[in-house]
Amino acid sequence: MIYRFADPAFLFLLLLVPLAAWWYVRRRGREAAIQYSNVDAIKRSDIRRTGRWRHLVFVARILALAALIVAFARPQSGVTEETITTQGIDIVLALDLSTSMLAEDLSPTRIEAAKQVAADFIQGRRNDRIGLVVFAGEAFTQAPLTLDYDVVTTILRDMEPGIIEDGTAIGMGMATAVKRLQDSDAESRVIVLLTDGRNNRGEIDPATAAQMAQALGIKIYTIGAGSRGVTRIRVDDPVLGQRVVPMRVDIDEDVLREVATRTGGQYFRATDRESLEEIYREIDELETTDIEVEHFTRYGELFHVPLGLGLGLIVLELVMAHTVWRRIP
Image 1 (tube, rainbow, N blue to C red):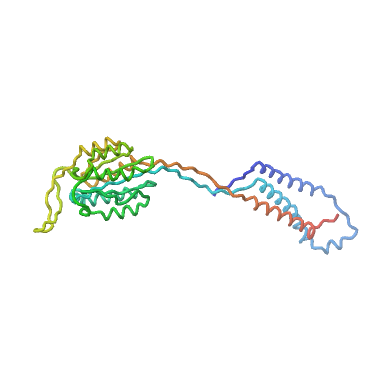
Image 2 (cartoon, rainbow, N blue to C red):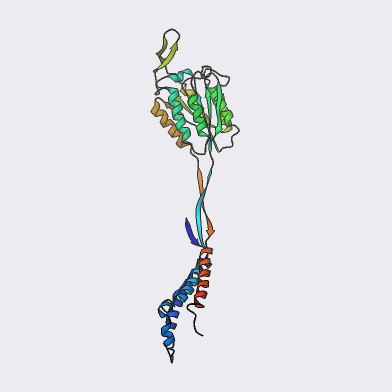
């Protein structure tokens, strides 16, 4: 809470208060004595009751003057508020759901690591709309652009390899994400695409999808998920049941790098869970939102408090001056 006087110049009039007190004391010292031929009536009066408090009339008058001066200065109380103006970023996450994402080189698996880190990234955003696209042999929009981060993370947790026909349609995943952003009027539009393979399905190749994004001013960050060399993956064998088999990591880094460079983004390689977390942190820092904060204070008038006090003291003074402390003409 903030307090101020709208017309503080009136407070200089408070200098009259000590002057009035000085004048009152000086005048009382000069009062003439009155001689009485008979003082019996005065002796019978209760001088202790009336005389001791006779100065209260003047005190009430001087306090009333001070209160009225403060009222003229218009005391106010204010509450400071702020208006936040921000231009959010529209971001679409494109996630590979091919069966190779079940590889265990990113703990516990590539897909689980990708989902958990992406969920943290989503929850860390502010004022940015987030959308979700998944792809394997085909590509689908799972969540349109929204500010409801809880909904997006809930949908993300339910995504598993096998719900889409297998394959790696990187170009289709990018094109679907571009379509989600083409009508956006956000100042910055971004796609974060994560895959662990090479484009081998779909009618649109990554180069064509990158051209589409470039034409619309959409930036693409690409992430290649997977260690280098050979890793392990669990497969369901119809004869031997579930077993672990070796799998060679085959990420088309040249294409992912070209896509990112063409659209003004960057390419990253995540060889373990820690490096994937660091990549998302770096993207988070690269794609920040400018926030303008405007502070203002809303004031309310308080002059009625000292005004009411001053008028009350004037009434009290008049009552006292014409009753208990009435003066003889």
